[in-house]
Length: 225
Image (tube, rainbow, N blue to C red; front, side, top):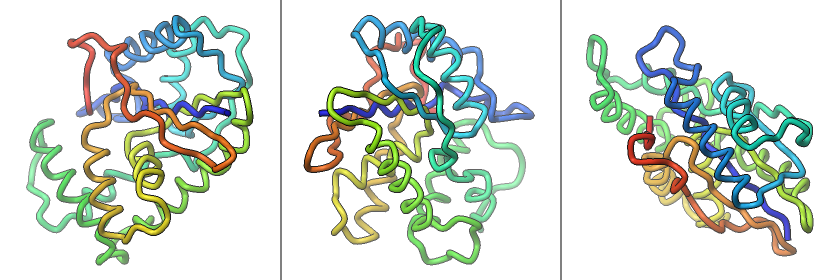
């Protein structure tokens, strides 16, 4: 069997001019994860990451913590990028005025993504939720081909993508849109920064093995946004 380890990026810089940059906590989370993976004998045969800066920086810190100076070549695949959360939130009709703190933003974020994932207002978005689902499934299919017997691939991506893949593998292809969207929402809201989600690849295709492992993080390192 093969193995895919999906890693959510480290904490980004909420409230900064550029969100797509790891915070100091995010850098430390990723270094900690790298050491934790090495202690458990993880030596990937392939590494894939999305095209966002927070993906690249997470991989840089992870590789440093893991000691992967001579590790496998890194492949960039933008299908592992997060959905445009700022666009989704901006399209929400009841968006409060003024700057939002983390708690207030999270509440708006959950309502806005619920509206987006319901699929009733697709004209408001550059990427529909169904398009996002198809893109993330294609990303998984591509990396599954790399994770053959005895091989393992580390993928650095984002929480919404991890949740989308997790929902797809939990529910299968026959789930209705509403069930899929509700499952994705629940997974997305609990995905921790630098958490690890494992997908085992066998003859029957990819199957979800674990979701949101984050025991490598000390309590003061645990973040969700």
